[in-house]
Amino acid sequence: MVSPTRPTTGYFAAVLKGGWSLVQGMGITLKNFFRKEVTLEYPEQREELPEGYRGPVRLKVHDGQYHACTACGVCIKTCPVACIWLTTEKGEDGKRRLATYTYEMERCMFCGLCVESCNFDALEMGRDYENAVYERALLTRELRGSLTPKPKVEREKKERAPKPELPAAAPAAPGESLAEPAAVTVAAAPAGKEDAR
Amino acid sequence: MQQFLQPAIDLFERIPLLGMTVAGLTVFGGMCVVALVLVLMERKVAADFQTRPGPNRYGPYGAFQTIWDALKLLRKEDIRPTAVDFWVWFAAPVIVFVAAFAAYVTIPFDPVLYVKDLNIGVLYVFAIASWGVIGVLMAGWGSNNRYSLFGGLRSAAQLIAYEAPMILAALGPVALAGTLSLRGIVEAQQGVWYVLLQPVGFVIYLITAVAETNRTPFDMPEAEAELTGGFHTEYSGMKFAMFFLAEYANMVLVCSLATVLFLGGWQGPWLPGFVWFFLKVGFLVFLFIWFRWTFPRVRVDQLMVFAWKVLLPLAFLNLLLTGLLIVLGVF
Image (cartoon, rainbow over all chains, first blue to last red; front, side):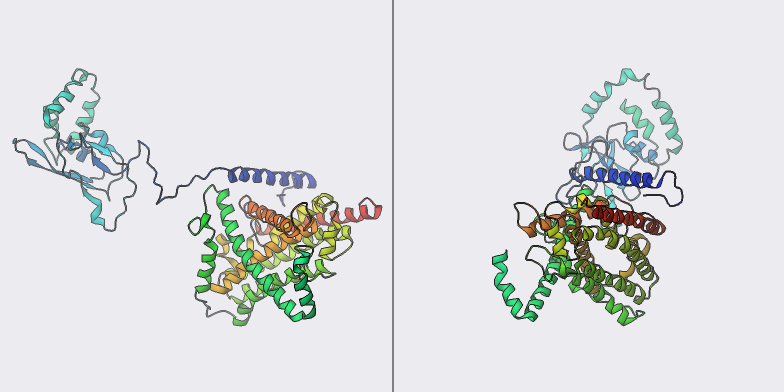
């Protein structure tokens, strides 16, 4: 369209130039007219979200029935918004084990730090996106459910492998010391870790 | 077509009142159907431009969507705001609707399918269609609402500004055909359509037609973002539906007129006349929708400058050149 205030070119040149730019714009919209639809019929078709999507936190299920959590509490200390807590109990073998793992989704900011901080591959970010509920209380979830602790033998086998790499894994040390000052809720965390190694 | 309709035509010539009633009802029914189809077309084409499916729940490809919409509008409460100037407010949608309705009378959809062929057809159509401005202005004023008033005022200014170049552009074909009768103009395009002889006139007509029907990029009177709907803010239910109906009827009217004046009306090979006519009108309507999803809305001052400083001189030049060429015997 010809500018009323700044006639930079002649009258007819401006009209032609403006007209041509309109035609160009219409060409672009026409290209989109023939493009395939990009939308999904949502309730009928649901998209599987990609690998890196950070949905609500859950305990990783090993072999269909086990969880790998040792109740060390590193995730609790790492969580910036304090939306995780857990309780422990004494198992039949007299060892301390996870009783409940509570996750408050209403406070979670889905940063994924708990998953990254976990030393036992016990946590993962889910890929659900339909998390709306009618009551606030429903957002606080108990994650352990019927999962039982992973048998110790297997865990030792797994942990033996990275042992030679220990000197190389030096950067892990500052991270631990960083977490140290906050170690109020679960004091046994560093000790439990050393036990595992 | 001719043989098929002949008995009816004979009957109507014997009983004029019956003929008028049937013609009126036919035009009214046609307008309603056209509006329903156009709303669906508008939404589907808009969806295509935005790479989404559009309405697709009711019927195959959402074909019944607008029927449900119309039923919903019919069932709605007819709200009358307390502050309105009742008779002005009440009469506005009627006037807008009647203006759109009455102009259809002369449009020749087919060699035999038309209501009345007036020898001043072009003049009649433009004169009747101009009534719409009064209705819009009344709606804006009677609603007693600032937004509505702004919408009505903008609309009046815009329609008057764009009517001048529109009529000047339409005069080109009139001069070429040597008649004001719409039928005569179509018949004069036997050999070559006037869009080839009047390309500038056609472009000017198309631009002004978009502005006359208050469509994007010239939809200032009802700019949703600025005026919350403009002159029809205070209308609901059936009255709103009448504005809506008139809007789409006007759109088809200006497209029909463009078809008659520039695209050879019903003329075309193989297919029957009215099929050609509606194909051409459909293409122009598609073009309008295409404009809508391409161009951003212009500002009020740009709108006026464009009409008075660009379109009007160009239309005058075009008409002068046409006249000169006719006198010189080129056309």
